[in-house]
Amino acid sequence: TIQQLSENVSDLTKSNQEKDDYIAYQTNEANKAYYIVGSLKELKEMGIVNTSGGFIGIGKKQNTSADMDVSKFQTIDRTKVTTIAIGQRKAQVISKHPEGSYELIYDENDTKKVVYLTIKDVNAFWRFTDYLVVSSK
Image (cartoon, rainbow, N blue to C red; front, side):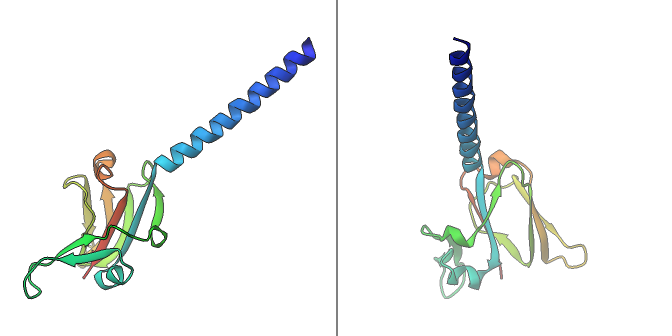
């Protein structure tokens, strides 16, 4: 009887560990987010950004493509990363993120160079998309 109870405890312990591992895996997958930083030309060539609208080159709007190649993106944990290095001049966020949920931090010596993006409200920032696309001109 003692041996059978010991085997039952061992089986239950193993089962609990498998469940814990699965829950951790699911949590990691649910918290994944992706970002990419590059020039508008680079992002267009990769098929990540397209431009639409405008007239004779004026008023064109940059949008993310529906069929982006995720392998080109950096993967992060949205619950742990609140600062993303940009290091580009005239950088702008192309993907859809609510105003006020992030801030572009500029270089003190070069007011056109964005040093990094800081996420002020994590839940609001990632509400619409898991992808952050930043382009520079």
